[in-house]
Image (cartoon, rainbow, N blue to C red; front, side):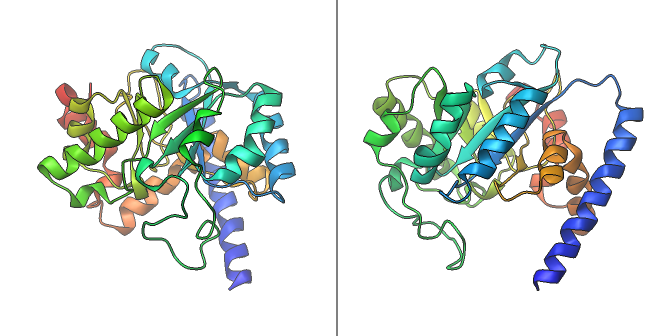
Length: 282
């Protein structure tokens, strides 16, 4: 199994390198912002995370998610985000971000603060037994550098909710975090990367200004900030893996997943959502 995983990573690197070569020719003048998302950063991973952030700062302009509200800006940019607000991020990643002056967004689930994850997560998942920050610990994040965003109230699959259930899940989380942090919560990360047209419409109506997904899609000028793709990264990524992801080179995965699913799953139809619902998410 370990060998199979290693071979899969090597194959992925090969495809990503080919994608970079193609995009340098085809998309040479296309500016973009790549949003990265982590989950936890353990003590042993902290040195690896430090090297990633040092390289990222040397290679890109790192901007907060709020910067995407001015999508007309033209430069190669990166956003750093963390889902679930695990406390090991506060303990191990925050000092590094502060030292390097790197802004980031931490997405919290206010209905699960101070506990271990209560949502669906495999028993052998590395974050299964990690504790989530308490409200008081979230308040200690420096607001000039770290912004708290919503990861919903209880971390459900939003596509399974309708009407008031969906609206309450999004609105209650926003309200709880705003009362806790003392500032407007403008960003939402959809749990499990699962969303649809109704999700985006509800988020817009409730007042979210940036909605991030798990679609491996770079954000480009003219795109709607109410549907921003992100690239999954971990401190254990190989150096070349991480650099390719920051370059947006794993965007080929979206097409591959769409091909495997017959292009029927909503999370791989981002462009169609934006085209069909320009009045909603524009």
